[in-house]
Length: 410
Image (cartoon, rainbow, N blue to C red):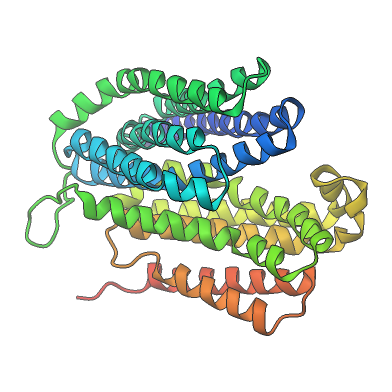
């Protein structure tokens, strides 16, 4: 009875944590969505294009922040500590320095105002450094505080832009406000993570979490680089079909593909809360947690594919409007592609968390295969590119599954 009560309590805590993280993710996505909507109404076409380009660059520059979060979370879950403060600061400073050094090139190549590219470094510093505290909270399984911290970081990242656009300011002033609000969010993130960080550091390594020579792992640049490479590979493969459609298809057709890709991204990101919650257990080699997460993600994907099969017209009406209803029959294929990538992302995170070698290599190889097949073999149509994307997602899923579940070498 006591054991059953304990399990029920654990499930209740995980359910509450999942709901909180889901809400935080919705807040983040909502704030990110508000910016282009306001920009389209407050800025000229030229200013909107410049701001949108800088925001795209900011998303790319934020990849080290995600890598830092994964590396810190996996290390703390497995070993119970690590010098994340110095590593986080070094990662943020290095990323901001690279962004600053690239500012002249970005200014000329993308025809951007120099003020925007310079301010990009400041916003990048705040976003990347925030990954340290998110990783500490995730690794310590303090998920409610993690959800609050995610909302705080998103608010700091986007609220300055929203306020600037509402006030009718130029893009440079909007980005300056975003840099200020992003930096102001950092002390609050540190405060939210402090109790968990102190308690975890005192606890020491997790029992049984030792490498073969019995020495605890060291949190360093290698782990962050590995996680960054995996994050970049996941983003690249999930956006590759959209880029290929833009390159290979006529403008109107590529636009239609972009509408369908909304369904792909929805099926991809909908179950990501499962990956976030299970990562600390994956780092400890919890096979049962891995299998449970896989079942949940597959179930979510199956539900979304079934829903898109039944309500394909509604899905495209919501995603792009009545002009795209003729693509309703392709809705299950778009959703299935995203659902498979959701599985891939969880398995890649598992390999990163367990310190597997070259965890993202299969994704890069699959991306190259997708590009080659779409450019050289597939028909130049929405269906042609989509089938290549679906095949690539299936290949990546099978490959990552085999690598993850293969018997360990003795």
